[in-house]
Length: 576
Image (cartoon, rainbow, N blue to C red; front, side):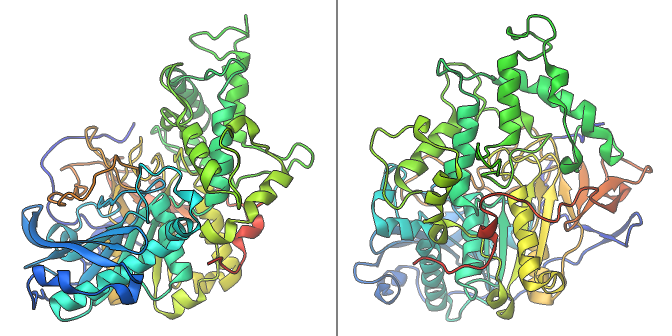
């Protein structure tokens, strides 16, 4: 039975994870709520924040552009907009009557270029819903209209790491001025490139945040955009320049995957909870008669070839070495639509746009000629070595988090198993690398990895995608209570979230509404456990209730992922 998705009234309070004892069934007890904190009110007017100098942080030309009172989600707030030299835009939202001494900075998806105060991974969290946080975000130093910003070396640096760090410093200065005290605790929450930004903060600036939530992190920026998306786009492009596989074929493929692998976790529910144990035999989809012609219930030779390439990823033709950590996992097929499998033959392949915008202006020390196309990309070890040169600038894969741990920092990494944009194996490889460098016992004192079955990139999918990682993070940071199992909930069909996704340029408009994820009443629920454990149905009780699941180690736990960038996951010196 698939997890049901129901409409209904929204819950106003955090729906908290249930406790799990060992490998037994879940009890009905709930984790403690987020720690209560005293409300602190402003000691100065909002307008006076316009006088705060930023030159000590961003240099000459850095300034507050506006400071005005607005209403955000029905509550009074002070909105501060500003710029840091040369062109880093930021926005800070400070509650007027409800601040609970916490600060949260929101990561920016895609190549950013816009201020995105879109919050995920905190569904139903009470302190957030009651306006207890100061919130801030940055456009990372450029406009979305400036697609070639990578031609400017300074803007490359601002995108790589400088914008988020300086925004943290500015926000804390404004908080101290406005409330007469610094935040008691600071958090970072991002997904996609926002997840990369989250890990970059932990690695480069270990004192900026007490708790960091990194979702579906584009930590391997160089191989992710320049190799993965380029390969996916080319693999689904025929010699005529048109896409080979179209979205209408994806349910056929997905159902074949489910037929082979759905029951591997002991439950036939439309979700593949252990995709690394799924070795999908694509040959079952081959058309037996007239194989050159696509047919309703099978794939043509060209379609099957494209499918195999999409799963496999690129390898050096001479050595056979992989150029990426991993490709999309079995069970992610329905998410491919609109990314590297278009709906119509006339539609552009989104992966091509992602790869080109990065390859032409970001990935190389010297940008390629203006007429560069994906046909010029070479999937070889020599070509990969050219990407290595910018790895120390963009990639957030340094596993030495000794300074972050020493500062008391806590890190939650999470990823959807059905992510179509960024393979979850990137996150697993990083989790392993931190353990290899710092020791597994040391790592487990401050870091957790959660993998969500059937969840697409940052949100959505067939699996339960609504989750609150923020409340467990607050309990970990502020009370020392480390998270274990966390409950996820099925989103309603009409629920959409833009967390971690690139958005149209918004401009400097008042943030009168910040969309918060809410959990539908009677939503199906399921726990997730820290890797390498996962949730399996106990065989008793409601399959739509988290209480009916027990923990079990994943059957497949590779000790390492071998690819050309394997050394990216070893300590290195960052480029400034």
